[in-house]
Image 1 (cartoon, rainbow, N blue to C red):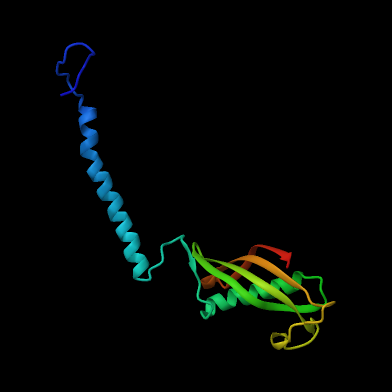
Image 2 (tube, helix red, strand yellow):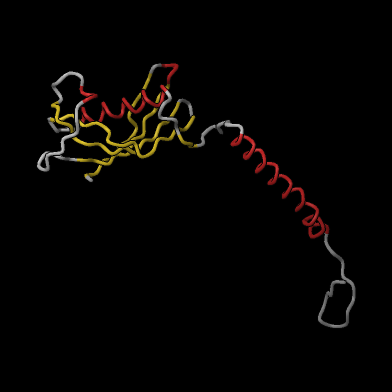
Length: 160
Protein backbone atom coordinates (compact mmCIF):
# COMPACT_ATOMS: atom_id res chain seq x y z
CA UNK A 1 0.00 0.00 0.00
CA UNK A 2 1.29 3.50 -0.85
CA UNK A 3 1.16 6.23 1.77
CA UNK A 4 -0.03 9.58 0.46
CA UNK A 5 0.77 11.66 3.51
CA UNK A 6 2.76 11.39 6.64
CA UNK A 7 -0.41 11.18 8.62
CA UNK A 8 -2.58 8.12 9.01
CA UNK A 9 -2.08 5.42 6.41
CA UNK A 10 -4.51 5.73 3.55
CA UNK A 11 -4.42 4.43 0.02
CA UNK A 12 -3.56 6.92 -2.68
CA UNK A 13 -4.15 6.80 -6.41
CA UNK A 14 -1.34 5.89 -8.78
CA UNK A 15 -1.22 7.78 -12.07
CA UNK A 16 -1.37 5.93 -15.37
CA UNK A 17 2.09 7.29 -16.24
CA UNK A 18 3.60 5.62 -13.17
CA UNK A 19 1.84 2.34 -14.02
CA UNK A 20 3.02 2.42 -17.67
CA UNK A 21 6.69 2.51 -16.73
CA UNK A 22 6.81 -1.04 -15.29
CA UNK A 23 4.96 -2.32 -18.37
CA UNK A 24 7.44 -0.68 -20.80
CA UNK A 25 10.52 -1.95 -18.97
CA UNK A 26 10.27 -5.59 -20.17
CA UNK A 27 9.69 -4.39 -23.72
CA UNK A 28 12.79 -2.18 -23.55
CA UNK A 29 14.87 -5.02 -22.09
CA UNK A 30 13.59 -7.44 -24.74
CA UNK A 31 14.54 -5.00 -27.52
CA UNK A 32 18.03 -4.55 -26.06
CA UNK A 33 18.45 -8.33 -25.79
CA UNK A 34 17.36 -8.85 -29.42
CA UNK A 35 19.82 -6.21 -30.67
CA UNK A 36 22.64 -7.79 -28.67
CA UNK A 37 21.85 -11.26 -30.02
CA UNK A 38 21.63 -9.95 -33.59
CA UNK A 39 25.04 -8.30 -33.24
CA UNK A 40 26.51 -11.47 -31.75
CA UNK A 41 25.06 -13.64 -34.51
CA UNK A 42 26.41 -11.39 -37.25
CA UNK A 43 29.85 -11.38 -35.62
CA UNK A 44 29.85 -15.20 -35.37
CA UNK A 45 28.71 -15.65 -38.96
CA UNK A 46 31.50 -13.39 -40.23
CA UNK A 47 29.13 -10.69 -41.45
CA UNK A 48 30.38 -7.12 -41.30
CA UNK A 49 28.23 -4.35 -39.96
CA UNK A 50 28.19 -1.34 -42.26
CA UNK A 51 30.37 1.40 -40.79
CA UNK A 52 32.05 -0.86 -38.24
CA UNK A 53 35.84 -1.02 -38.08
CA UNK A 54 37.23 -4.55 -37.99
CA UNK A 55 40.51 -6.41 -38.54
CA UNK A 56 41.66 -6.68 -42.14
CA UNK A 57 43.33 -9.75 -43.64
CA UNK A 58 46.81 -8.79 -44.89
CA UNK A 59 46.60 -11.59 -47.47
CA UNK A 60 43.53 -10.02 -49.10
CA UNK A 61 44.34 -8.42 -52.47
CA UNK A 62 42.40 -5.22 -51.75
CA UNK A 63 44.16 -4.80 -48.39
CA UNK A 64 47.54 -5.37 -50.10
CA UNK A 65 46.66 -2.79 -52.77
CA UNK A 66 45.82 -0.19 -50.09
CA UNK A 67 48.97 -1.01 -48.11
CA UNK A 68 51.17 -0.74 -51.22
CA UNK A 69 49.57 2.62 -51.96
CA UNK A 70 50.42 3.79 -48.41
CA UNK A 71 54.04 2.59 -48.81
CA UNK A 72 54.36 4.34 -52.15
CA UNK A 73 52.94 7.62 -50.83
CA UNK A 74 55.18 7.44 -47.75
CA UNK A 75 58.30 7.10 -49.92
CA UNK A 76 57.15 9.86 -52.31
CA UNK A 77 56.64 12.28 -49.42
CA UNK A 78 59.87 11.30 -47.69
CA UNK A 79 62.82 13.62 -48.33
CA UNK A 80 65.19 10.72 -47.68
CA UNK A 81 67.28 9.56 -50.64
CA UNK A 82 66.95 5.96 -49.41
CA UNK A 83 63.89 3.82 -49.98
CA UNK A 84 62.05 2.61 -46.85
CA UNK A 85 59.88 -0.44 -46.61
CA UNK A 86 57.77 -1.93 -43.84
CA UNK A 87 59.66 -3.80 -41.19
CA UNK A 88 56.37 -4.76 -39.56
CA UNK A 89 52.67 -4.07 -40.10
CA UNK A 90 51.47 -3.65 -36.54
CA UNK A 91 47.74 -3.38 -37.34
CA UNK A 92 45.45 -3.46 -40.37
CA UNK A 93 41.77 -2.60 -40.18
CA UNK A 94 39.04 -1.71 -42.60
CA UNK A 95 35.71 0.04 -42.52
CA UNK A 96 32.97 -0.31 -45.13
CA UNK A 97 31.45 3.09 -45.92
CA UNK A 98 30.64 4.61 -49.36
CA UNK A 99 33.84 2.80 -50.32
CA UNK A 100 36.42 1.30 -47.97
CA UNK A 101 38.57 3.01 -45.34
CA UNK A 102 41.77 1.15 -44.53
CA UNK A 103 43.73 1.88 -41.37
CA UNK A 104 47.34 0.74 -41.04
CA UNK A 105 49.97 1.06 -38.33
CA UNK A 106 53.34 0.36 -39.92
CA UNK A 107 56.92 0.34 -38.69
CA UNK A 108 59.17 1.46 -41.57
CA UNK A 109 62.91 0.97 -41.83
CA UNK A 110 65.41 2.54 -44.21
CA UNK A 111 66.94 0.18 -46.77
CA UNK A 112 70.34 0.18 -48.47
CA UNK A 113 68.73 1.12 -51.82
CA UNK A 114 68.35 4.63 -53.08
CA UNK A 115 64.98 5.58 -54.54
CA UNK A 116 66.47 5.74 -58.04
CA UNK A 117 67.19 1.99 -58.11
CA UNK A 118 64.78 -0.49 -59.73
CA UNK A 119 63.14 -3.38 -57.84
CA UNK A 120 63.04 -1.79 -54.40
CA UNK A 121 60.83 -4.45 -52.79
CA UNK A 122 63.76 -6.76 -52.01
CA UNK A 123 66.22 -4.16 -50.71
CA UNK A 124 67.84 -5.21 -47.43
CA UNK A 125 67.34 -3.06 -44.37
CA UNK A 126 70.20 -0.74 -43.55
CA UNK A 127 71.75 -1.85 -40.26
CA UNK A 128 74.69 0.57 -40.22
CA UNK A 129 74.21 2.64 -37.05
CA UNK A 130 74.72 6.01 -38.79
CA UNK A 131 72.26 5.13 -41.60
CA UNK A 132 69.75 3.05 -39.66
CA UNK A 133 66.46 4.89 -39.36
CA UNK A 134 62.96 3.76 -38.43
CA UNK A 135 59.55 5.46 -38.43
CA UNK A 136 56.23 4.42 -36.99
CA UNK A 137 53.34 5.57 -39.18
CA UNK A 138 49.56 5.47 -39.02
CA UNK A 139 47.69 5.69 -42.33
CA UNK A 140 44.09 6.08 -43.40
CA UNK A 141 43.53 5.13 -47.03
CA UNK A 142 40.16 5.55 -48.75
CA UNK A 143 39.32 3.42 -51.78
CA UNK A 144 36.30 3.29 -54.05
CA UNK A 145 37.14 0.14 -56.04
CA UNK A 146 34.24 0.34 -58.51
CA UNK A 147 35.43 3.85 -59.51
CA UNK A 148 39.12 2.84 -59.49
CA UNK A 149 39.90 5.62 -56.96
CA UNK A 150 42.28 5.48 -54.04
CA UNK A 151 43.56 8.32 -51.86
CA UNK A 152 45.50 9.08 -48.71
CA UNK A 153 43.07 10.59 -46.20
CA UNK A 154 45.54 11.07 -43.38
CA UNK A 155 48.86 9.89 -42.11
CA UNK A 156 51.21 10.65 -39.24
CA UNK A 157 54.74 9.40 -38.67
CA UNK A 158 57.22 9.65 -35.84
CA UNK A 159 60.82 8.50 -35.46
CA UNK A 160 61.31 5.33 -33.46
